[in-house]
Image (cartoon, rainbow, N blue to C red; front, side, top):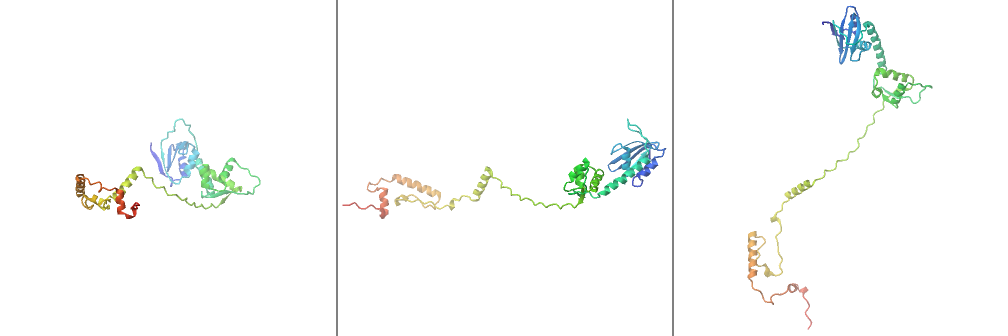
Length: 294
């Protein structure tokens, strides 16, 4: 198997290649690629016996696609091996290339009807035609256009190619049922105010931690507390207590001394012991009881 011919489609047009390979002496396999597209043609005595590619096994469609290429590479090998189970054909490559050129020219005319896919169309409110006859596909296009749609939206919504959709759209426009209009300006949407998120709820452990932090910042200081004072009803009961400003050891010693002296002190006479109420009255003359009447 040898490579007889190879080159670029940019410098060798498909029509020229088909005219060259149409000679009865050429039998082999023609391979061409352009991007992701692949085409393989099997030649027997200058006739195309079979073809296959990314678009299928339609030889006319393959040659038409090849004629429309502006870039790509090709090779021609001197050996041919047809796929199993196929019936060999005998198609003239020159005629296939000519038909492909004619179809491509028609396709270019169709695409020229609407060069921009963003062309905005709308249904005419009051058409001038008295009798309207629509095919199901044309009614579907009118229903999709509605008050206004772009060609790009129609291609996506209907799932059709431009070569298939543009002729039907052009027929509706020629009949006066749709017209080209100016697309409306998009309305700016004001963002809705977003409420601030609520503060996170403190768990029990978090509250305890915060309370401990507060207590640590405000420690208890005994020296800052006011001195402890004791009010006595009798001045004689102060015996044994020291000044509150003394140390804790001195306070303990004075308390013990006061307790021991109280236990060892003899009982006073009954006249010396007076009830608490009488003491209060003597100290406060206002509370004294009136003298009994004689």
